Length: 217
Image 1 (cartoon, helix red, strand yellow):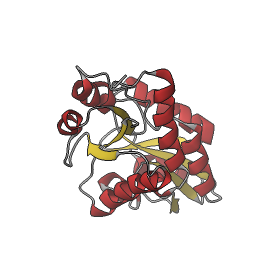
Image 2 (image 1 turned 60 degrees about the vertical axis):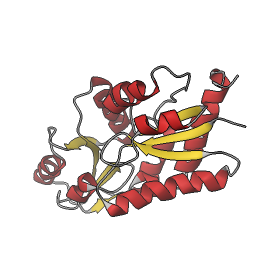
Image 3 (image 1 turned 180 degrees about the horizontal axis):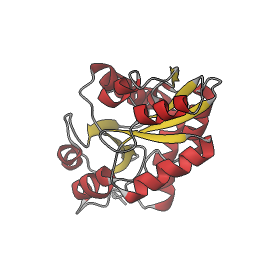
């Protein structure tokens, strides 16, 4: 039997966002019906990753997160401490996400990359690198500076007539909803809605099997 695919999402209070993540994991299960796939969370929702790890004998942990920030380095790392469960790279940064954002961006005079704010240097570096690939200005939500609304307003003052927001967010939630009040003309959908994310999750799982001996061996 292959190791369990233990997916770890951030968690959200948004019922719509919760369903988007459940639907994403269900799509992975349909693609790989032979796998035992479990969904857990790093924050907000239950079950937390730390509660699920003891219930499986062998697993590959796949963070459904967009960078290797605090939840990967601390929450998930603490949850698997003492096991041999490999933890894959998070979903981002990855060219699949860049392609998804690019495909969903409408024609615009300017693009703002909106990402959930974080003080983690690696996280911020990955966001800045993605913005460079998109040719986008960067704005943050969740209290970080500059805010998305401030960046949009600045672009308006510079003469931009049509501004699009590239939402670097996996699912809808409070952060995503604030983007609709940021003054832009268009916003890309949450990344979880793109079918291209499903094979990316499977690829993370399979890569771990190629590089790490399963705990059951």
